[in-house]
Length: 118
Image (cartoon, rainbow, N blue to C red):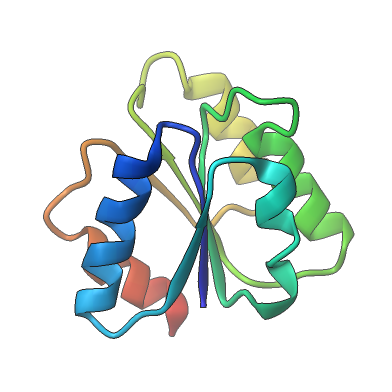
């Protein structure tokens, strides 16, 4: 199962979930890090918005996963690559993020997600 955490609104969550479902990939979507973290026990992959604005920002989500011993791959997404997100992207990579994916999503988005699930 893919856990998606993105606070950019329900539309982006539905879009990601729709594209994944079309390929038979189950997902759950959350607009807050706190609620998303509650699903880590069943996660095969986590996708988190790098610009997560709420208190539990993306870097904290990644740290929580790694400190908790979770070994699933993590992909971060952002509409600000490569400019504003450079520092955060570097920090995410240091924490073992498997992929950084720009928004709007590239045509190979689902293929990249499928590769992370292998």
